[in-house]
Figure 1 (cartoon, chains in turn cyan, green):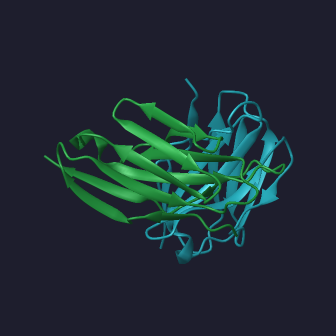
Figure 2: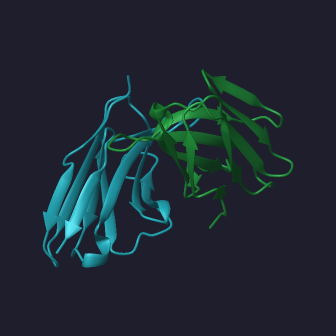
Length: 113
Length: 113
């Protein structure tokens, strides 16, 4: 079974803090994604990566950066957390072979106070 | 940004009722249409990946159809059960060298025992 794990299920941070969200997958997938999910807005893509050290902006990259130093790990960084970044963050991965089906982690509910 | 619409936004049905919902997507640059089920407190899980016009897929009591020419897909649930309660997401994959999926906002299904 594909396993995508995220470092925390719940996180509370203060405005202005630097926040790291970690995601690890164990299926040797090339592609990894970070989404945020907000009520009424659905899943929105923040960044994705199709290879180590490669990254592409998604639909809402402002205020975020990412790092992919190893194939299995994709980190989302909030340089200076703000209250409008309070959200559910989901990581996903997919293979470049087959159907491109995405496998999701359990999510991190981040609250910025 | 691609437009992927799902309707209805939410749905309440009685146990045993059959139901269906719709996903509409751009009819050009089509590569695949994904359906995911997202249960509360769990990760989204893939139900179907559909690529061919006229495709019909089935998993137990859940089935889906695809019309790429007019840009819509239907998801059907026969004899709904409380365990079917979840948010159902569709996602459009335009291919053309992209690994990204564009998600709709989902249909939240509640099955009342």
